[in-house]
Length: 226
Image 1 (cartoon, rainbow, N blue to C red):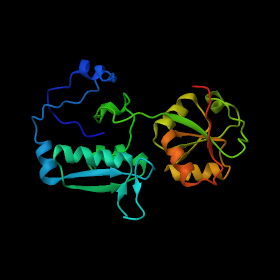
Image 2: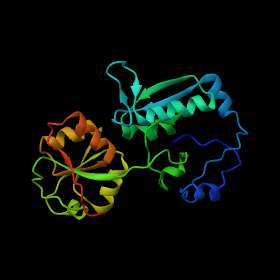
Image 3: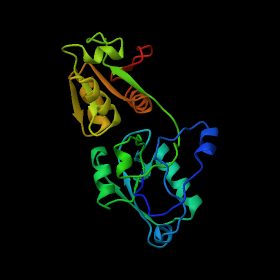
């Protein structure tokens, strides 16, 4: 997400549809570049909001520098458009949009879902890549979670990252959820038996399992769709 500029032209929605992406109504950013935002970015650089959520973004232990899939995409885009100056601001995920709204950062570099509410204050690029959410349970699946419907079953505790789209979904179905500031805290809590299940992005869950093969956590491969 980026702060929208005061310009007049918009991309062609029909062209984007031909690429397999149907933009939400009133969501396309203006790209006429009649203001000086691009020139300012080239001359003064950008403040990039980053966070910790492998494989999207994390600090590489060998270099102590940001790394990950989303970080690489952002670096490739900046190189393509000729922006070489930037600084990073490390935030919890729930703080990203407030930081963007207050001009503490210029760009949210992580994956962020486009919603009607968010479109009132920030603009989005076209999707960089697609992924889905899945259910993760601890060893033995003591909560007997087999479907998304089980998230609303009485007594079931569901973990989620605060400020995420998964949290918005759980709030919508009125699930009994416990919110965490970051994914690592969420995963560790699930492994410790505090929840029966968590809802998060499949790539994040898979990355955690790869990095922590003895955690006992597993992704439900055949859960019924919500």
